[in-house]
Length: 527
Image (tube, rainbow, N blue to C red):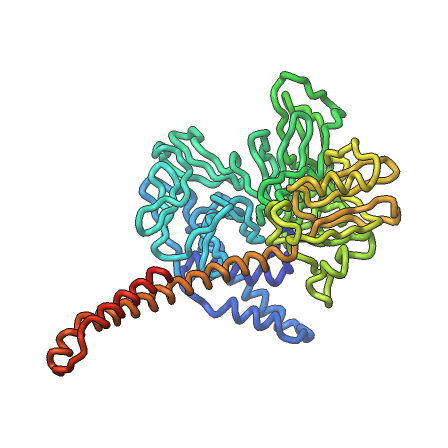
């Protein structure tokens, strides 16, 4: 499933049937594969008898599904244990809300891994995930249990993840809002709404000590004193570059310094609001469905491309309702490292020499783009390009001390951690890039010039260094073997020499043999 992308109606029905039959009844049925084969068949006219049969079949299936979902647990008590079932190929439901709209369970990832998730059942859209930075092994030995805390462990009792509620909770419930809670005598000890992953749902608070993180881990959303912003963590693993910022417009209330941090909330009326005190927002970001009287369930999600998007559920699919960044070229890296984005023209590479595949615009991937540029002059080459600028230059620090493009380049050249710089001849602003080069925006103004370092031989140098080390080790081992064997032969000859002389009764004296042995050992020492 692609996050945020609407499902075709047939796929939702098929996938939902597959989930319920496999996970609630816990045995495989051929019905989903049968339906899939029917969907893939060539479309033919449907007569009334076929339609009637299909209606009866759907009615029967709906009855079965109602029975199955009503049997699913609606609370987990102390002592609860569950293991992934080998018969499940997608989602194994463990706990439902009272409306069977949301479910907590095991989601199978890449066949061999699992994630503990809360999903929206009609669409199978994950809304929350335990420990999103890593997945657990899909094995009947992996176990989820509740002993006051929810814990995932392996066969050796090693805890992978825990809610850390100090074994005080007496039950786990899933609310109709999709909020997973651990309670002790109706007091909330822990809730998933306090630990969002990539998604916020309606009426969920987002505070200054939280962050949304995209599923690929590259992008995050956080709140500032009077704004919300999106940040990119580029492949050096260190840089957190702001690439989108929305400041509170203070249309209805003012942000008062010293009166506490702001927080955000996705409102069911169709907007993302920022608040500081009370219920009056200091800012509203309206969705397309703002104040429209429709029955919907809203969510916002930080997508893998770095965009923040809002959706509502329209009974059969998710409808795009809001996006923070409307132009593709304004995204942090829509064309990948060393890519060039032009409005209306799509992606290309900054230079033919940075193009990996001549049949596409795929450029240098930057996976090996790390390290010190002062370690060797042959580790990189320089690429210059006119008519380029940064998509989020307004949010970057600029160097105003450079009076020319030459000085801008020279300041980056002298900086061992600088990957490049973009200079604007009209303003005199120099924007140094202290992270691996991402997508640049192509413009018609050739006074905007880019200077970029391209590391292409680093991996070759690494391989050469590894090869040299291996070759050196082989030489040492072979030398040791040769010396050891030579020493053994000399020792053996010395040991057997006098006895053989006596047995053969020859007139050869032992003197030369001793001299030969002495010379041999001298030669070994000299070697």
